[in-house]
Amino acid sequence: MNRCNKSVVNPLCNGCNGLTIKHGLVHCRQRYRCKNCKRTQMGLYKNNACSLFINNKIVNYIKEGCGIRSIARLLQISTSTVLRRIKDIANCIKKPLMRSGRIFEVDELRTYIGNKNKECWVIYALDKETGQVADLKVGRRTKTNVKRVIDTLLIAKCKQIYTDGLGLYQQILPTTIHKVKRYGTNKIERKNLSLRTHLKRLNRRSICYSKKAVMLEACLKIYFWYDGCQFALP
Ligand SMILES: [Zn+2]
View 1: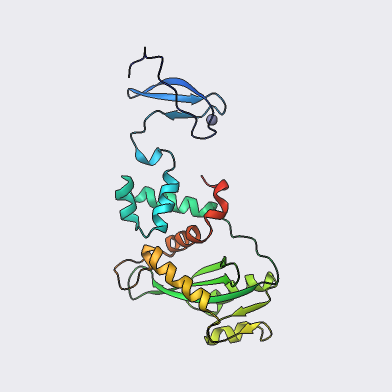
View 2 (view 1 turned 135 degrees about the vertical axis):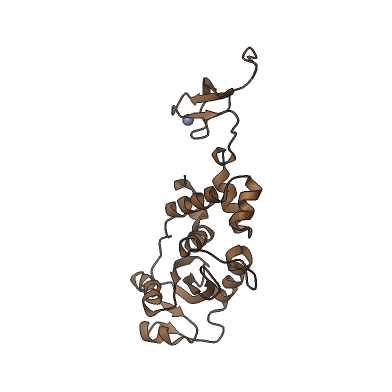
C-alpha cells in the first residue's frame, strides 16, 4: 500500500458507521480503528468469514434452499464456520410475543435426523390469520413434545386450535377449543410445502437431511423468526 497517498479515504466503522483512522499494519495490510467505538478492523479481509454482512448472507442462502456445504462453497468459508454462525444467530433469536384470543393451526412435519431410519418431527403452531409461527418443537411425535407446543398456546389464552385427526390432540386439548374440520388446517399444510421447498434439509426424496436436531431447530428458527429481531443479532 502506498503510504504517501493522502487521497485514500478510510473505510467507515463496521460496528457504528463512524469515522476511522489508520491503526498500523498487520501482515502488510492496513488496519483501521474507529474514532467513536475504538473497534479495529482491516481494510481488506484475507479471511472471508470476518468480512461484513457474512451472517446476513448465510441467512439468505439458508432461506433460498442452500445446504451447509453449498453455503460454504459460495461464500468461500469453511463448513464448521457456517455451522457455528448458524448456531450463534439462532441463539440470539427470540420467540415472538403472542396476543390472546387468536386462532391457531397445529401440525407435524416428518423428517430424519442422522440417518433415514431415524424419524423426527417438527411440531409447530401457526396463527390462522397472520401466518406467524407461534411455537415449534423438534423431536419425536410424543405426547410430551406435542403438549409443549399446545401449552404455549393455552398460556397465551388462544380462542381455537385446529388440528388434523391425530389421536394425541384429543387427549391433550380441551374439547371447548379443539376443532377437527375438513380444510381446517389448510394454511399450515401450505406452510409445510413452503418449508419443504425453501429449506434444503426438508426437501423430500433427496439425500439431504439434518445430522443433528440442534441444527434443524436453528435453521427453522432463522426461517420463521429472523426478520422480526435483526436488531439483536451478532
Ligand atoms: Zn465504531
